[in-house]
Length: 405
Image 1 (cartoon, rainbow, N blue to C red):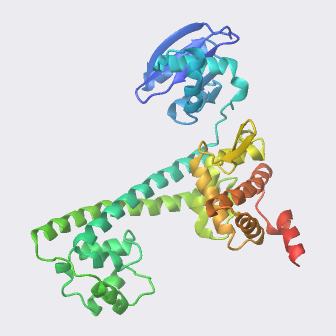
Image 2: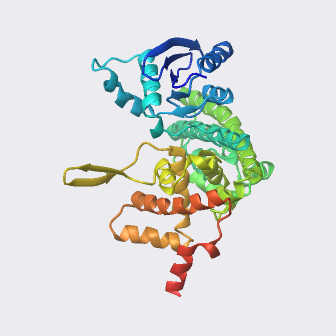
């Protein structure tokens, strides 16, 4: 193996620019590889042939990264913002190209490898959970967009249908709108017919048919006998047809995620953080984003920073301030934020931290991040020890309860 050879890969969806430098920073090779099976095989084989010590790339996951790791190569992920900031270090012309970015990445791997974390692959169970939670997140965003469009269409000519049930994208609401997509379709709808409809679709809500009919009839009247209404009726049916399979698949993914979380070696650790069993999706997201490689977060501060719970310090002369951390794992930040927000309602320790932050003048989001940072200490310790959260052994909570005692 040749000592001191480093590669930079400028990732793209169709073609990757690759630069290999020696220990002195001289370019040994610059090539492009197609993002197909033949190209990826050739890329991995060539890097091994050249004896590359470290590969730098701008993203931490994806098919190419998996293949590089499987080939036995050491890979480090460098944020695109860091690469952009380093371009003037190697050229003052202000130019940018894929080949130049590959060179910058190779140089960062050569000179600053000690500043970046070497990627260590997670287990298949964790990668499966990550794929499931991210796919569900994408489908939920798609569902929300379609539901908003459906609501907007109904507000134009049939607003009553949008307010009968609590959620317009629930299975019972979609079934109702599919059966009664326009005011003309609901002219003969009475209490008995609605009761049969609810029974047929397994409605388990707490509203009686009479109450639902009151909602329906109390809304503004729609325009039932115009060409525009008929056109909107067809649009509504199309949106319902698009929403139904999305809602069904989200439910299926939710079930799959619960099962994958239950079977995961660290599943109990993250499930124990939540009081409500319905929070399994949030627990699964937290586990999927943190992963199972303990070396990824060697300290609590590393976890808090990646989760967006720690501020960024900005100092200049006598000025010192802290600002919001934008560069982080947004999915992990949202999951820990959800944990912090829910725990303040039932956990005395969490409520105390939140209330003291609010008393100091912090806004609600800021107080939640302060509480989230405290939770990061608990999560990191449990994760490192592979144990479940136990309130009886939570020292800070017990001290608070004793002081109040």
